[in-house]
Amino acid sequence: MAKIRFIFFLLSVLPVAQLYSQELPVEDSLEVEDSAPIYDTTVFAPSGALDKYISVADTSNLEKMLSQNPTLALFKSMIVPGWGQASNGSYKRAFIYAGLDAWFIGAAIHYKKQAADFREQYDQSSILSQRNELYGLFNDRRDERNKYTWFAVIVTFVAMFDAYVDAHLSGFPSKEDRGLSLELDRTEDGTVLTKISLSF
Image (cartoon, rainbow, N blue to C red; front, side, top):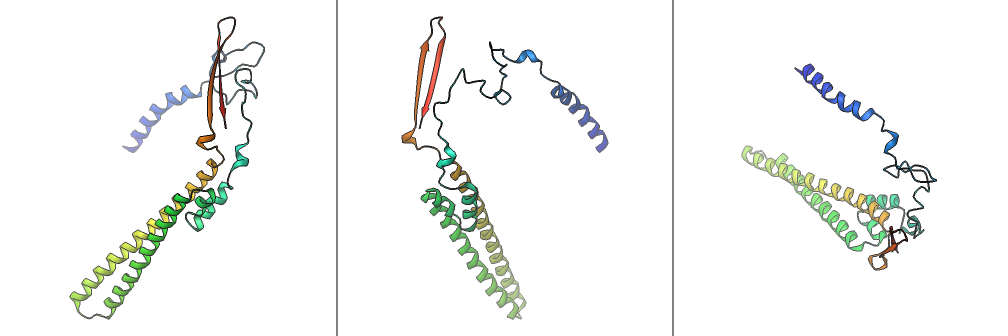
């Protein structure tokens, strides 16, 4: 039965694979006078091919405006959740991550201590019904300890990648500094030229 399913899978995938393996015809490109052809995507366009249509209005290097290295922010939040956010200037999120992690670690320690106490009482007891009850309590506290430990680990991972992304975005201008303008010009032949500028 598995062989028949595999054969049907191959027969259904083969036509699709052949379709995608065919090269696109050259006529799909847009020929522009006195320049190289411009394709549907700019990924394969030669450098500077779109300069005649749109120019760079702002040459600011946003990488130089980052509050810190994003990888450093990731490792800071791995050591202490919220440290990377604090270095990025996001103090509210730093407080939330640090508070959640401290709460979960504290709860895990609390339940670990209770589990150890119940285990000790279980070992010392000789009454079967009492031992069964103590073992149930020990098992419950151990599960709670594991749950809060996993919560702390999850908060740490989320804080790490949040600090990493936040450090990448720290170079962008604030909302107050951004501006967008749109200008429409009509040439002599009736063509409408659009100029969009984004100021930081």
